Image 1 (tube, rainbow, N blue to C red):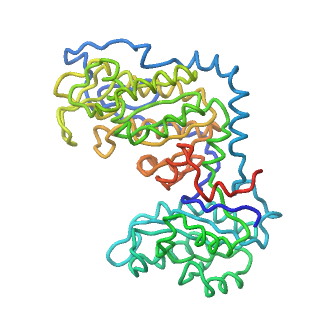
Image 2: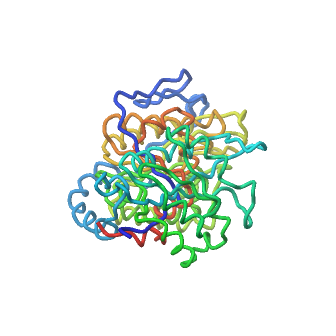
Length: 449
């Protein structure tokens, strides 16, 4: 076997689009350079004084860029040394013609009571990779999980995916009734070049989630090659400057990701509910915003680590706050360092969008995981949507843009720019583990390039 790894998320690599421009939205507070506006009034108009950017909250991009030239060589060497793996994009017809390729995709799609797919985002995400493989003569053995079955559970069969996969690929996808065993081996043995066989739900076997080596060997025996996702190579050996945007509600959920990215990236932009723990750790008032009091020391240490590593870690300088957690809440734009009592931060503000956009203009690779605010509520989706459109604009300029995690994927889908991103990884859990630097068993086994 030339290489062995079963990824838990699909690749969705697309050609860069040209001329993508962020649209404008009519409202009260313009977002400079980003083309967006907030539905919330500014703090100044409501009698709250804004404060200037605190140097402890933003280690400026300019200083990072001066330091980058000194450290780029050693960091690049370390990245190459730690993971120089082969991805599907490295393989051409000479490598793939007639080869059996086991592709682990994330086809965990929602189904209605009649077993119809209600959202095919993850299926569509896998199509470019599958087409690359079959277009180069490979025999693709496609596997995925669906739901949380306890043993063999008919309602979690992958059979409902066959029609949509066949339609999108333009060929008839075959379906196996099992994952391993003699019948599956027989089906694989008669596959013609350029065809696809979908295995049954891998989680019908409890050994799958336990990384059981014997189960892995049986699955591996079906193929000559396993596919490694685009995400790994792009993060391990990125074009620089390399920026990461991390959002989400809690620092505790992204500790590993942030710590790992501080070893890899040049610029780290933070948003979402986690930012208020950083503000409180530095003594700023946070009102009724979400804070993890037991992570204040951690937040302080992460800021210190960023400074030590020479990473430009940027936090928002203004935020959109609400008087309650509800879509119809009253809202206003205030300084991030002067959130009034009784108000909670639910999105980044217009100045922060402008500053983040300016920082991103300097980059060659950007990875985004996690929303900037409570984007499920329209009033507090402005920051997240602005970042999505900015990344679409950068994609059109040739910047590598990687979207990971279900919320970020949902955001780019909502804005309508998913098709212009360089890559979308829909496997949230596995994406986070890779960003944290954890070794996935399948990835570890891959051939070194």
